[in-house]
Amino acid sequence: MQKINKENPISRGRRAALPLLVLALLFCAPACGRAQEAAAVLSKGSGLYFETFLAFQKSLGRPIASFDLSKEKPKFAPDLKAVAAFGSMAAAFDYPGQAKVIYLLAPGYAPKRAGGRFTGISALPEPGQAVAAYKGLQPALKRLAVFFKTPSGGTYPAELAAAAKPLGVQILPIGLDGPLEFPGKLRDLGGKADAFWLLPEPALINKTSLQVLAEFACSNKIPFYAPSGGLSELGAAASFAPTFTEAGIAAAAALDAALAGKPLPETIYVPHSELTINRTFSAKCGLPPPGEAR
Image (cartoon, rainbow, N blue to C red):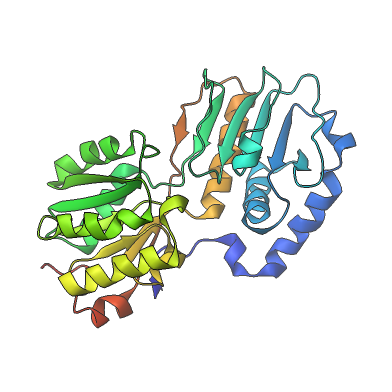
């Protein structure tokens, strides 16, 4: 397994995270938060939520009131201006009406009343970067099938199509209601695509669906691109996706912009994503080595 972009402070070991952990525990008391104009709310104060929060905190460079929804109900300052929400439960919390909400790690979440208040840090890579990455791995790529959950795909397939056109790549968007539809959709896809990519849709991802996709890729000799580097290890040629560290950094920048009164878009793509290549899978399935023409 080869990871092209290895810049990930959290992955360097728990020793690097310990000082941040101590800092987080010191400053997250609600009493501190009452004097703050910004806050961080975590669906749960552990796991990926907390690790991403640490990257967010490090990038922010100053203390911020933080709350663990699994243990307490947040008490916000009257003049709260912005919130960073980690996870779907945190994103859906009822925040004061004047507060800007920046949410991340919330796949499938969509604000009921956006009104310019909500900005999502996307779990998807920037469209142009994604197409360029897969085109670089597969120079002869002309038709890329993209699987997504209906209707949560939103505008992303259209953004991909626009970014792919100058590179001579056609995007074939394929919406699914659930993972049981994969076998039929794959049969219909036979001979019509040069590669296929599963977006990070939790409702479509399980051990069986990943196995079905990997077996189809092998038997038809076309690359399968996974939603994340970790999932590519289960049977995919590669993946191109944002890291949790980069998501935290992007959330910190968005929070600062919100506090400065700057307008934010509904969606922010992280500046850098990580390319992970599974050469073992490609060799086992008889696929050309990444980067070689087919």
